[in-house]
Length: 267
Length: 240
Image (cartoon, rainbow over all chains, first blue to last red):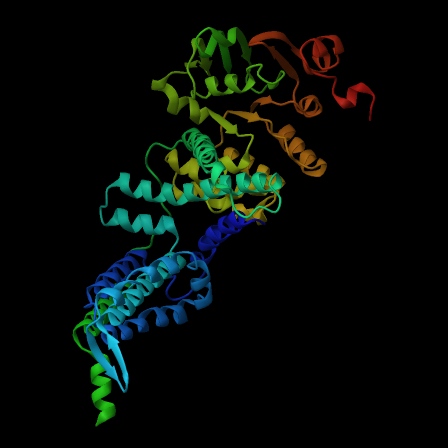
């Protein structure tokens, strides 16, 4: 299995994770979507120096990992390509912001370091929340939830088809990469001289397959309307989940839990 | 059931792929459409399904294939693609099978009944909730046939249904096709499969219909087949 085939397999595995059963999986997709959006908004809203305030936000993903039975390492494994990019955000902050904001014994910590760590943590938390949503909710149920909120049909269909077509494109990339390496043994990656034609071919092949897939959809009566998986009515437990989680996020945002804990310990 | 009347088609001006093609297929007939690469077999299928439009008239059950009638036409015809990966685009076999019936306005209950009936008929019940990326090529081909049968079409079109299958899976697919009672139009280079599943053969060459007759007769005509870049089926060539 080459890297691309592995990526394709992993992508498909997300559907399997989402099809599992757990208290979190059984929640209404709209409730999960709402709390995830709220979580991301609240997380992003923390001040760039408020690292200690942000740390308690870790509790929510940790709790969800426990309740959903999704292994944490699966999350980090699947996010291994995106994580370094997110971690790179704010990497230069220590160079620009050298003002000392914290003195830990003899160690002086600059504002740049704190803001860099805050940004990294924010990115990590947002990624984990998105991953948890995808790993506990099938894409068509998410789309059904979006339609419930009257998100335009075109946008929702675009989202669903993009998700499906990513697999098609990755599949084509897997075949092409394998064909390339069979004729370029010992070569690491794709040589820069072949990038242009490789990308061009990838685009053409993906378009070709996408056309075939679309034809297959049309021949089975598709007319710009997807019949998403049936979603049960929004129940009290879903409303409670959404309300409690959003309240908890707001609490963590406006009540400095870390400072409170610190005071308690000092007393 | 299916009627082509003086149909011509060209992808590029001046280079016709089909020339003045006329034939008809009666309800319940099993017809093999054969010909060398580039003979126009796939184009015939695409024209019939309204994926392409050419000159002349194509009728399906008396309804002309036109943009206005596509929904009616496509409801009557089920198409099994050569590449099952292009047909099975949903995560699971079940989700793929319900796609067509739901689009045609069937209730969830009726769709469920159809899906279960088709899977039981094809002996694929255990595939129902399997993930498409985790089933074998043979299973995928059978599942692709199942997705089409769940729509209960009046005619089934198949593009190379036995390609890329091992002998055992090929035999399973052939037996399944033979058991289908619908009108069948099958394109293939696997002439043994055509011999096993079709009673009539249409031989295309250079976009023209060069032979139309009983499968046993046409597929035994070595001179005719070789003149059109084909060979006798292995079972008739005495090589088995």
